[in-house]
Image (tube, rainbow, N blue to C red):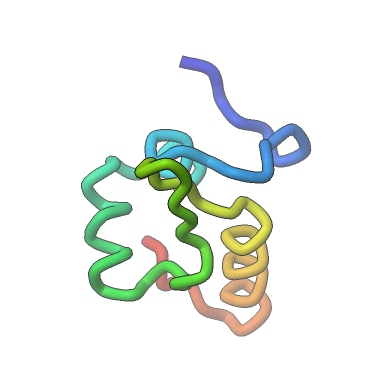
Length: 73
């Protein structure tokens, strides 16, 4: 499997790519959505498929880092 460097991420990620982005299992992404750990506006549905907005995820990580958070671990 190839890694997803920060500079080359597409604007929308699949659940699998999102899991790789956070270095977690895909089921963790499901749990984070249910628990509202991930921002609700990160999720995007197109044609019945679920994607995640890369920019929203990166902004959420950055805001957690700046605030001394880290609720994604």
